[in-house]
Amino acid sequence: MNKFVKGAIASAAGGALLLGGAGTFALWNDTLPGQDAGVITAGTLQFTDPQSVTGKWWDVSPDAREEEELVIGNFVMVPGDVLEYRGNVELTATGNNLQAILSVVPGSIGGSADLDALGIEVEFVNGDEIDYVNPGGSTTLSHPFTLRVSWDKEAVDGAEGQGATIGLSGITFKLTQQRPLATP
Image 1: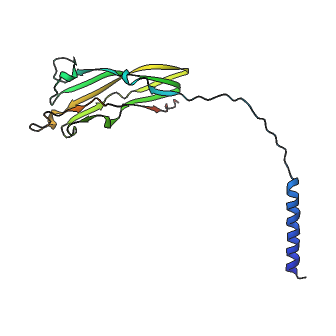
Image 2: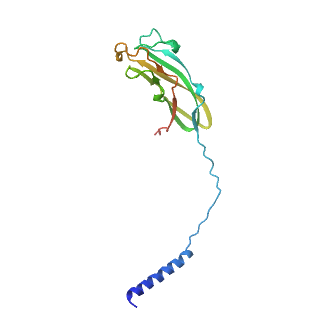
Image 3: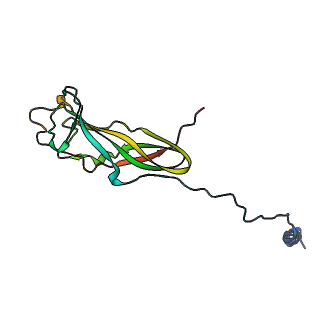
């Protein structure tokens, strides 16, 4: 028998011994099932009702006689006017460390003409942070907002924009949760 065959037989025998002993090597272990570590519940952040938005229009033009409440359907806007829709939106918040930003979805404001080309800007001027901390309860909050519509009188040339409309009946508000910044 040559050395190669003897080596192969010895290797096979050693492997068989190792495999045969594999089932006998064990470490102790145990389990402890069914321990109650409690329940984690997710909070909520939502608008209470689509009809909960309340607001009024105001003429806040720099050259207006005085700031006055408007009936928007009766007001005819001209270049240089600045109008604000001020109101409140109701939301329900539940959770520890809950902070959110109120905003308006940009595409939800439309018009019959290119508003940018006419110098008409519609902006949500107070996307305030909503801080809310209440360990264990749910609260309905009334949060203020202001939507400003301004028409730059320098952007209009000739009769541009006459008869144009701005569609504000489909404004979509948005709540976005933010993680509070850690305080040092």
